[in-house]
Length: 253
Image 1 (cartoon, helix red, strand yellow):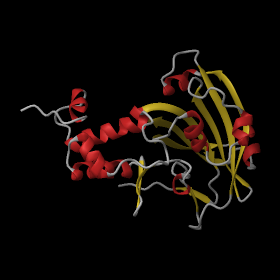
Image 2 (tube, helix red, strand yellow; image 1 turned 60 degrees about the horizontal axis):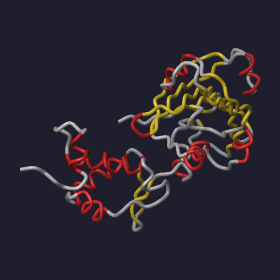
Image 3 (cartoon, one colour; image 1 turned 30 degrees about the vertical axis):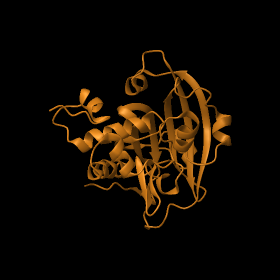
Image 4 (cartoon, one colour; image 1 turned 90 degrees about the vertical axis):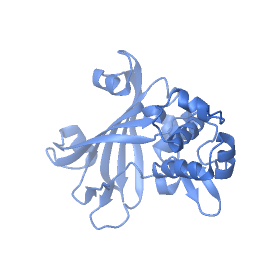
């Protein structure tokens, strides 16, 4: 007997048959998020409404929404419903910044200073990581993060030029809030997940001057590729961290 439930049949057209039904519903909701049907910060329909829309049980929808919430794409709010996650929320602003003070307290007051923003031809390794063709343009940003007026993180960031047309130092300087919030609200690019590689490095003279440490000082370097929907890479970031009073925290399992 053929299943003609709305939406599910379309999902099965490009989904392996062994995929559980709730995973298919999760995929359909994710497509709605990607298409901008529900904007960051806005509520999505109730589980009852989604169940009727897709022709499945409410429990199936709930399981799909639970996974999306666990992946920080959706946020459940008690008594209010389920909302599209946004990088402007305080609870998610530091989701990708894993640096924590050794004393266990909050990071303290953070200041972000844009040192450089320019367009250039993508270096070979950056183009490869972003899935760009040789010679395509990227936006390069260098940013210094300070905690309690102490320089702590120096970020070098590369973004696909085609996705970030109009991004400039002036626009960055006028923005209030996290960079990912700016990318989300003004360029429609939402950072979903990131993969990082960590290594110990010695500060060269330029980096040491910017971070206020002696040349050759040990730093933690995090090389990150950040992805949006459909695992599309949209950012390469190289961060150098001063860790004499901070540590990098990652929860496993």
